Length: 270
Length: 210
Image 1: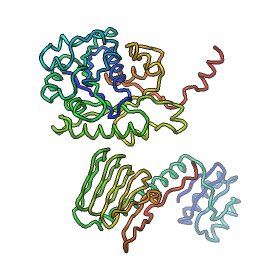
Image 2: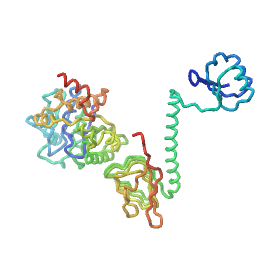
Image 3: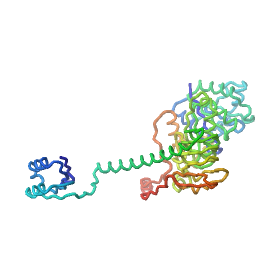
Image 4: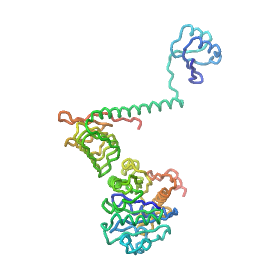
């Protein structure tokens, strides 16, 4: 029996899909069986970020409608065998989802995989509610800016009232991922510090990801940045994936300027 | 008899019983030959003569500067902590004093009020957690919030008590309260004679060190 993790943010454009793709791959690289599911019905993106867009035959709606089996619809990642992907439908819209069908699908996935990661749509409407309804844990992705924080605060509020686990009197584990941190801007006070974000949201911090120019190109190419050993963001994703799979990995400080005295000295002698 | 080696050359003591004191120095006066003996408290003429006779150097009732020993640092820390505890106590005292004034249907909430959530209380409300941006609190009675408010507050009671909340939107009896006036650590907002009066409960602390 695996666990279902919903990747949510409230606001769009903060990097949910990128986080889903990279962490899915990262967890698979740790040797676990992972399924990433695009829940953004009508606006699928995750296939492109994973580089699997031309391999999609059946989508999630067809599986729920019984037109295809789950096995037929799941696509194995080229980058890692342990990672499978289930595409969202591009032609239908969110109204096709209903609780029972979502539940059946997720239970089937849960049997098969160690981790089932759901990429939630932006916003807080029905599509979002279906994503969180049966989740065991939620990964909240924020950018260090006030609008993102407020929207995710709202999303957490809905999670706390609408999730099945909460209705049964349990609690959904909530973890925070701060994405696109620019050290210089945090230092100069233009960007929120992670301490402040944690104080507002009061959930557990799972990781901080620095802004990295390589991410856009990696997404365009369909090769998640975690495959790039040199990338700062890729390393951050690796650490987070490690933490999810139960490794104790120290929190790196991505908020101070990285050009320390030592690296400057190394630069001189190069 | 209690004595303490203040430093290598200084010995601090007090005279509780003269006989004991004399017998101690009878036995040890050679050790204190080159020392300064600091005596706290009263000293009789007899003891004075005795010390002079033993040719010991002594001085009476001076306060030695506090040495930076580990013990003293710990003492300073304890004092600091005590001060904080006292302040905390003052806050809870103030809250309980005001809580006594809360009359009807007091509701206590200790959970975060997140964006989009609305808390409506008919009666008085004591809220022990944050009110985040985009959240709303409405009460027909009095309101106390102990943490930062970044959302909206609508209060119709006799008084409110709020901490410094520059981002809040506060409407008290239909009148917007300027959040710049809530500059203190804890502020009381009261309606007296149709006027809104804001008084500081806990003053803002000025930290000289930083």
